[in-house]
Length: 248
Image 1: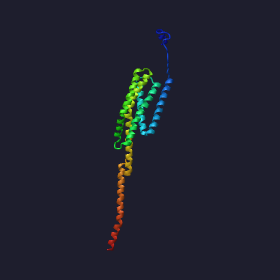
Image 2: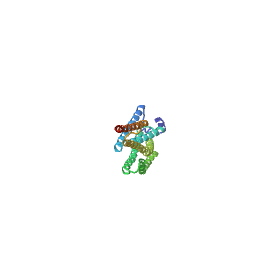
Image 3: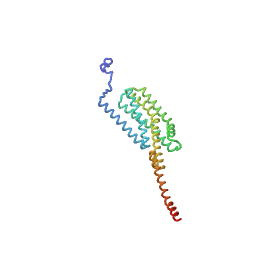
Image 4: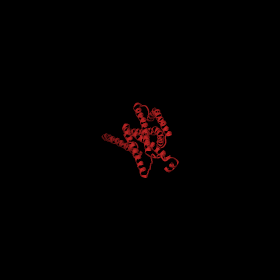
């Protein structure tokens, strides 16, 4: 390349600023560092969301982030984009942006749970999403406009970074609404049903799910005990009647 450029231009007209060579060892280190950095980020997010909300909210948030990261990695692999430190930075940026949007929705769900008592779980979460939807769309669109401008104007690794961010912003916006919130709703509905079943078991005095034959046997045993009790009670009366007849 230097010889060809030297023939076409003057000797000092070209300047080589950087030359990179990536071998198998270096690429392995990048992949390992990416996995550890993403795993550490997810762990810290899990701890933070559990401390601020509940474990169910943390699990839902992590599920949404895993979805976001998988989509971005699939985009990088599909279009054969170079996976380097810039791609790792884009992935972590997307995770941070997505969890911020999810926290806003979760915070509104928690506020409405304490304020509104006459709505069921589905209506409450739907109302919370509706109240935060305008904020989510405005924030995502303004950020997306800036990233699209960078993608159009720039080139090289900056353009790859912006392209990854565009995909991550779109995915992270809908995952907070359609994945994280839905997981919270179904999980809490399941726990409410389990609590209701346990309360009914305590009130009724027996556990649900006992076989029918066992119940019939218990009913027969109780009926036999009652009949035996009546016979025992009536025996002294019969003896008294016999004694009266003998006296006569």
